[in-house]
Length: 175
Image (cartoon, rainbow, N blue to C red):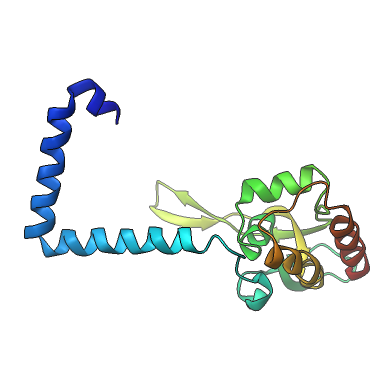
């Protein structure tokens, strides 16, 4: 719209004519436009209740990591980013939930090996890094409470006190 104001309606009409002509003559372009249109329609029509996050297999999102517990060993753990994927939310939003006290913070520490690019050898080098993680029982507890809540509403607000209290209690019991 800004270009239309800058160049006038004549430019806008010419651009639309070019798009219509390309749509008529280029089947690949037409297929892309139709796909985008259908995707937009589906996104807008799914404005009802969200998918139930409890239906997914949560073991596929976690990663087996070396855990710093008295018993030691390795177990399936979830970083905050993986927990955000679990609930189909952004990492930034999940961190906001934790910082505002809606979601309990992770207390378990594990060693993760993110690959870091070594530009002299042109290879990825795994470097150990300590990260705060949620254990599988904690993730399952969170899924029982918050998954149920998010299957009924789109949001998780700070005034959802009963959900927050139940979530804290369930995760505390899982620890």
